[in-house]
Length: 327
Image (cartoon, rainbow, N blue to C red; front, side, top):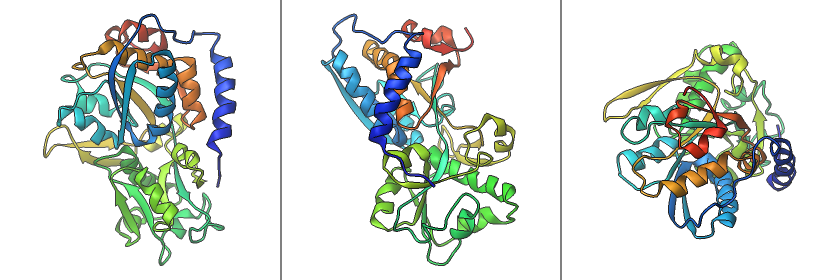
């Protein structure tokens, strides 16, 4: 169980990480006067770090109007692929959704840039707040009168990752039938994206919510740190994670995608039809810079350094220095 202050975490880690990685790469500096409108659609869990990245970016490029919009990652991508909304940058909490839902019509590359882990968030007012821990949480959630929330797996990766955590917990804790019990419980509440659950926690309408640890820390919530065997954070347990799977809505109506458990990794891309590619590339360049990655670290989303891409040859030239991958 843990409580974090995002302000002190941000200040200390931005300074530390910038000093550490600053030697290997230089901070982006404006080489031309950029201007224009830059819509950024992103996972709800990227709301705070992307706002901070955008604020720092605007100090370099004050004439760029940045409009950020958070939603579940599937919903975020479908704003481009189905609603045909103009978007300069897509930030997804699951990088695999980019090729699955956007390739080849709307993008042909992605960059993996940050990680996270699943947790159970709660407040001091939650029932059994003084009792819950990483060994008994699944028993407490089954008690009479307990309410807990998760996001919609068809709209938000945190939703299908929650279901994976339940499947993995059933095996890890040797608790037969646990998944079905949690899924079918009267206290199980579903919302479109995980950050929507925060207000319900704070109002007392929920006792617990399945969240990313970064979101819990950013909102100064208590949270149960789940064992690495089930929290989807560790490469060591990749094979075990892969035993969990969830079906979600696919690219076309009626089509389904089977998502298998794996460590949580975020991805970013630029839709190919965005008319002002220069400002989108400049923003992603800043995100991947030491200063941008320090902001991700400070918000509880450890960066992937070097970032990883599916195809370096397809990246804009300015981004290739940050990414490892096939040429």
